[in-house]
Every structure is written in C-alpha cells, then in structure tokens.
Length: 207
Image (cartoon, rainbow, N blue to C red):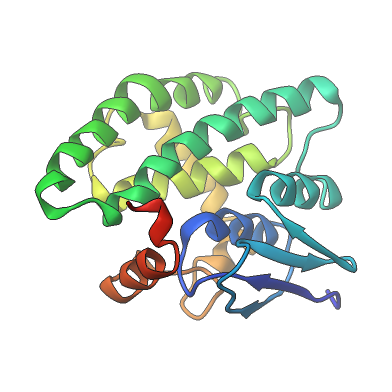
C-alpha cells in the first residue's frame, strides 16, 4: 500500500496504540514522529486529525472495519467503547504512585472479570467476530485490550474460553500476525522513561 500515514505521539503506547492496531489490521504502513502538543495526531488523506475517537472512526470507515450498516455500527461502537474504557484503566496503571499500584491493579481485575469480559464472552458465543461476519474495529480493540490485560494479569482469561479462542483466531490473521512480530509499529509496555516523559509534558493532568 503506497499511501503514507504519519502518527505524531510520544514514543510509547498511550492513546495512539489503538490507532496503530487498527491501521495494522487494515494493512497500512505508518510513519512515526514525536509531538508534544495536541496528541494523538494522525496525518492521513491530506488531513491532520486529532481526538482519538474521531481518528479511529475515520480509519474504521475507510478500511471497511465498521460493519455493513448502521445497526452493526452501533454494536461495534458499543463494544469498542467497552474495550476503550477497559484500556483507559490499564493505560493509567503505570502512572499510579507505587503505594496505590496494587489497589489499582485489584480494581482493574475486578472490573474486567465482573463487568467487561463477560460481555465480550457472551458476544463471541455464536460467532468468531463480535459483530456480523467479518473483522471490525471492535475485534481489533478487544484483542488489544485482552493482551494488555494479560500483561498485568496473566491468568485473567482462564474463565473466558471464547475470548481465548478469539485471540488465537485474530492473531493468526496476516496483518495482525505481522503487527505482533518484533520490529513492527507496536509499542512495548510503558517503561520508566516513557512514564517520566508523559508526566513531565502533561503535568497538568497529574496534579
């Protein structure tokens, strides 16, 4: 694919990682650039897009990852928002003070097992995809969220066999498999340097 998509963000996951995942699922090569103003920012189709939801909606619509009609789109939005809420908790974990980390991790585990994962497990009861009969942004976000969860809580999916089977099927898709290989645009879990950089640049959010 010859088009050029430029991502401007910190050198880490954050709000940009879901955008990287969705572009990877669409088979789009991305170029990175650091930017410490309005982030995330994506340059695509001659536009400079900000606001994560707007960016994700545009990418999903452009690359046929947004269902076949309005009803499917509504369901995709519902599942995507759930996955996003779950990932927001995980994204904030590295920024919690050391004395609060275990409490926060317990909160993530409780909300994931009681609120979020059962909904996704039920959604996969009779299909390999969350919505309709083809890959959508909801599937990509669920894979990302569930892998992030397992980084913090390795056994958390033990009671959710449908999600485990879903993971294996989606990871086997060529574009996703490529994204999961070393050297891809996928970022590693946040390290101390990333945490310090984000906290310094976005200090107003951590007061």
